[in-house]
Structure formats: C-alpha cells, structure tokens
Image 1 (cartoon, one colour):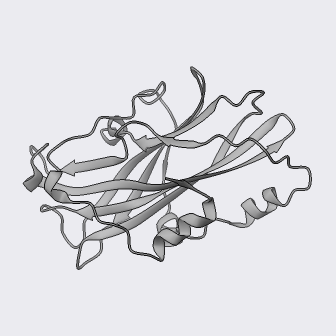
Image 2 (cartoon, one colour):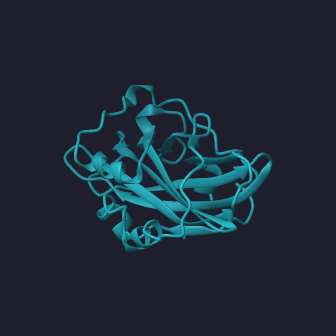
Image 3 (cartoon, rainbow, N blue to C red):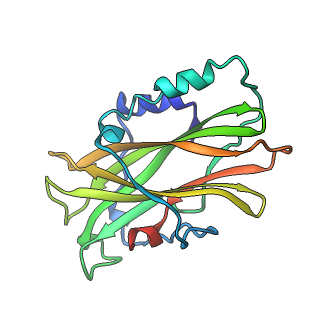
Length: 208
C-alpha cells in the first residue's frame, strides 16, 4: 500500500494486523533485478531509523519541499516486486520448516515524495512493516532485513541500494515495527512518465 510519507508514522500509532506463522513453511525468492547481485552499495540502518521511525518529515525534507523553485507534478509510484514483501529467517538447516523459523518480516506500507529541480528529480522512498518472531526466536532476537530499493526507467536501472535494516524483537510477543527512509535518490528528470520505484526483500543480499 502506497501512502504519503507522513502517513507512515501512523503505523506506529495503531495496531498492525499480525501475520499467521502457520503458513511459514514456504520460502520467498529474492528481488530479481539488474544490479541486485552486483556490487551495489550497502548501508546499515542507524538506531534512529527504528527508534524515530515516525519522524519522516525531517529538516532536509522540509527544506527541499519549501524550495520555491521546486516543480510539483509527476512522481513515480512505488511497487513491491512480486512476493518479495515477505522475508523469513530460519535456524541453520531448517529452511522451509515452520518449527525452525526465527522470524518473519512483512512490508505493509510504502511512500514516496518527489521534488524536481531543473535537470534532476530528488526522490525520498519510505518502507515500513512488521517483524514477528517464530518458534526459534528469543526475547533478545534481532532481525537483519535485506531491503532493496530500485528505481528503473524501462530496462535501465537508475538507482539501486541494499539497506540492512536491524530490528530488535521485544517481549512479550517478540514482535517489532520497522521503517526505513532512503533520502539519497537523485535521477535525471524524466521526460516521460515511465519511471518505476521497486522495493522488496532481497534474499541474495541476506547471504552476503
């Protein structure tokens, strides 16, 4: 579901529908995009990404959005590629076994904001969701989520980055919310409305 960036903070003010772990035996494929198995830059999320996940409209955003020279209009939509909205982590040797599941993460909301300044378009992409602990989790379990964000124009990849989002599961239900905002996207201003923003969990990135 794509919403405005400020709306992502609402995820942390309301209950999120849980994911049934009874169907966790099915694995999920990686984000199969050009560049997903290349030397794409990898970043570690800071603690503030999770602790202050609702603070999406930061000073940089306000500065850019208040620029009188900005042009409002076209802003590419965000899509989740295939079934990559789910990421599952299993104990060693237990892939596909629901009783060996450590945690399962799901993407529940996406958002984007665009600002066009002359020849460049600046894009902020927000992704939020929830992590649930499985039978092999503990009260101190941490989930490292391989979240990839890609911007494509037809067959050309304009931007790709793998974010390692670290989330600590909290008792008593061993669950947690997560949010990541990528503020570093700049692409040439498109002359046509043919740009796509794709997000998803990249399981190939989880193995690196």
